[in-house]
Length: 67
Image 1 (cartoon, one colour):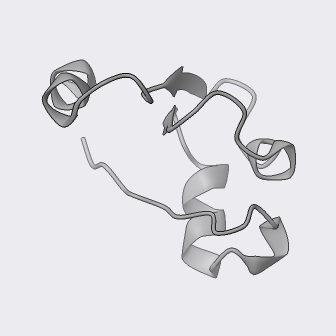
Image 2 (image 1 turned 135 degrees about the vertical axis):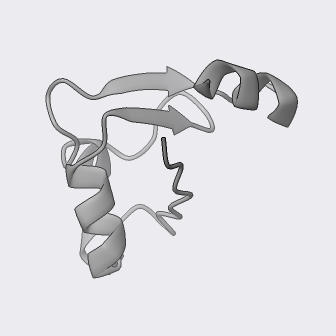
């Protein structure tokens, strides 16, 4: 499994890099730091992409969760 860290900046999907757009459109799992995210960016995700709020998890918990 590969893990990518993608920054969404201020949340405007037009400002995403081409690589970030490609990764989001092909994501199977997404870990958000916080609940909301930006709806315009979340709309890029495939319908079957699983979304998780990892805001309350420490790095060690996130790593275990990804395995």
